[in-house]
Length: 493
Image (cartoon, rainbow, N blue to C red; front, side):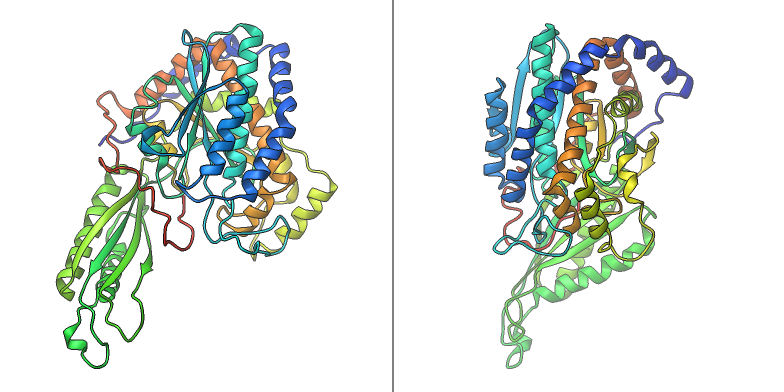
């Protein structure tokens, strides 16, 4: 499996970008049209975002959410292909003409278990609701739809040729929905892909992250009375615990950027029964997909050894496998330029008061000032982040750029109840509007400049290497549509 090679040298990249930048920039009139299109839909986008927030659905179970997003796009004139890649909640929506560039916008939609929270600045789970949008995918999906609708209207208003697509991508949180969509060839004819993500700051930096593989290891033993006949039993839980000990000792002997983490999802039924079944859920991560595959093979050997030593048997199921993000500096500069045109979200007095109260719950340590949400961070490329996303797979088959906007209170970690709270009120919605406008401007600019698309593709091809062939880390397995059943706790992205 090929890994990232150095991006285009500074002078060559600058020449490519400089040659195309002036040709692609939108006129003031076109900027106003696109921003006006987003503003015209913003109130409805807010309703959609908050409706999704109020009915959080776990990975591959986003039936209502997917239907709502599809309904919005269909009403705007998009043609919908639903149930793609063998995933009932995945879809591709298309609008525009086939005789121009194809530009895709990603739209995530799943929630996280165990993070139910009201839209208030103190811990208050919603009764009868377990999951919550603690990663902002209610905003992600609705904001992407808003951008696409604005672009479609602009294409029609200006007679610009090109196709805009929205990819409804389920189960980002550990289910790898995009990986299966990439494997199904759904991005094969896409020229450029854009996506955004909720965060606690505004920036268009194009950073690397971590590739990962996740799997459930299942051990099968023999049940027996734990006190009257323990010698008759063979404990599946013993096998899980011994596997965990071995992998924890392994941490000393793996590359420093490797991350390994796990939860025991089934440890038996009762302490007076020798467990005949136990299950542990693992994730392995590293910036290099090859290292991930190598370390995962060692984890498998630990599982085999644990089964051998406890007299049990073991099988495992791959759940997900994501590539690391392949940054694209050409696209990143375009997104950054348009983010500065749009400007950061502006909070009213009530939202600032909410932010101040919520920030007090974030624990010890230095936190960014509340005012930092009203600024834009400096652009960078090739920084290292330590999360994972199935958007990484997309970035290895089509040039991809990302955007972050402030939908959370500064200092808020993803996958926290504090993120859920902000995602369900004005702070979150205002950040999504900024994202929608920035994406709409960027997509329209790319349609007007084949040179910018060509420069992005040149960097993309250079970065991934001429001999690269995409091979999914998930192998040839089908989407794990039931991976969220009987699980507890959030799966980190």
